[in-house]
Image (cartoon, rainbow, N blue to C red; front, side, top):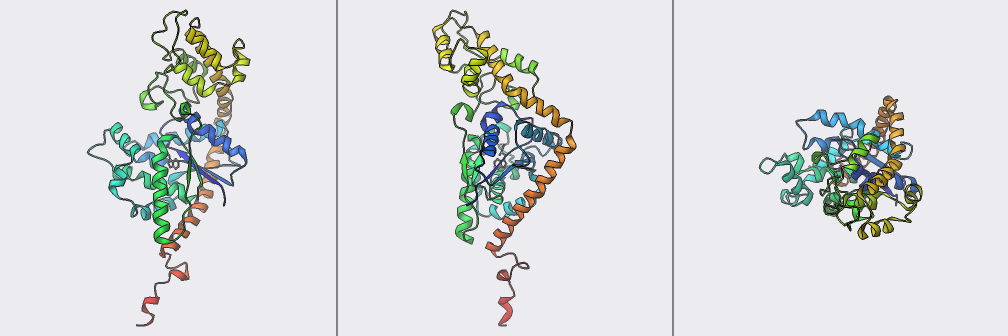
Length: 360
Ligand code: TRP
């Protein structure tokens, strides 16, 4: 069986370090592993509109930002098809048929939907398109016959919902859709990177993000303001590593090579942590090190972004060609699904509905 990846992001802002360690970096590694036959990366503008219907300009403005972020971290249009969700109509036709296989109460039990409803204060006025986005996400995944969906842990309920739809569809209409597997980040830290304030999640609305496109000055300022151990007042005090944002980020980003390059008096992160715990290691030193590590990772990304920004027409062309390829694939799946449902009345002799009248 072909190995196929589908993943994507809502274009509601530039991508940040949480996206990077949570999914985007992994996609680039998977892309370059050579283990996949097809890779589709979708900019989910239609899904973004399910809770931003009154602010389409925000979604519009961020489509190219996200595309630039993708390409600057190393997604390569020669290997990965990058496309925009709203430009692939077959996704909505599939969504309509899948909706009949899912109950409203099942959608209301979806843990991610539940917490998003709370967060957005939708309680008594949930847009029905929003409640339904897990079904539309099932269409995104199955339209591309995806076997592998690399995403953060908050997307687990969406992939579960997709599997249920695949089972129902295949049971009723015959083996048609491919069941996907979720691929989560390898470590806990990467699954849900906290914000620079130590709050649970890096999120645009909390204003605690470091963006891939931030300038070196922005990043330095943010790193220097990071939440550490509030009881670590003097350098000589013993410090706590758990819940200390600087160490959380070092866990997510630094490698032994970074120590060799920027802090050779320590071999690795374990040694640095041990010193911090003993006392005698100041916050400024660990923050400077983290800043150097982040710069090491982000400098080449920033440079590629600058280059791509010089040729926005070229980036648009990548997306346009991506949409054409995505439409071919999704249309083929839609045709297969409609054949299975026997509703392709004009294209397929097996779906002929005139038989009922032959004997009359
Ligand atoms: N829900 C994802 C997000 O919030 C975006 C998305 C839409 C997606 N369709 C998808 C992710 C299909 C993976 C697979 O970022």
